[in-house]
Length: 336
Image (cartoon, rainbow, N blue to C red):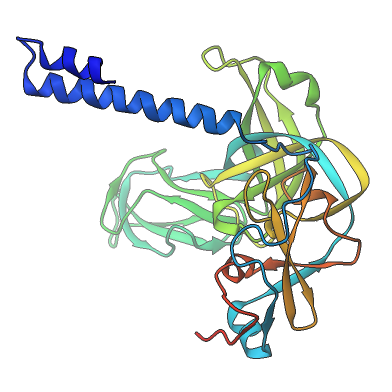
């Protein structure tokens, strides 16, 4: 290193900024070399590979934790059994919620006039025949004749384009009403994966607004051609939406199910903590919670296979487990 720094100092035309930059570049190179030697000297684990379990004392606060009923409640702990489950293989893609094409109507007026009253707002639910707005016609009369605008569909007002007092012309779109009891999610599949996609295939969608539960459906329609820029095929998935939770333009992560392995020892994905080579779960035994290191196998968006570390029937913590990592001691009273 010393000759390198001497060469830097001897540069007659090197200003202060160039000197600092070169020194920092050389220091960065040293850190990269250190990182490379560290990685080469470490056994890195990958999902599905068995390198054995770490020692029981490894990781953060490895001892058993005893919790009172009040502490459990305050932590919001939830547990599920380690069980034999179905692990699905899938293609993951990203999409946006849309109304089903034959399940929305644009409501317009056939006359010129002025909006005198509007009875609904965007987001309201309406039935077919419900009054949406009132128009005062420009036809001669005393008073001028009025025309009622009614919904032609039972659904939700997803768009409103008029306000009281606004002049309108024939065929101006006033409202959009959509039946959202069933929706579509439009996503895109890469060209290399198209052979694994077909009509009627099962799908499962997760939305940021509802991370506690998935929405299941099927592939409803495949695009006729690839999008040239992205080399992807548009795919529409049909999802039942009886509670109207899904709204147009919500973003979704969609899993197109391509296969399944049954009777796999697995736990819910949210039970897994740690990082490669040091994955662990917390198991419940009465009021005692113990950290157990595990080796992972296959996984999908819901479950993860456990190839080593647990037995069928072990009760694993699926909620509140992250907080358990930071409780010190063998007995704890967790307060709000």
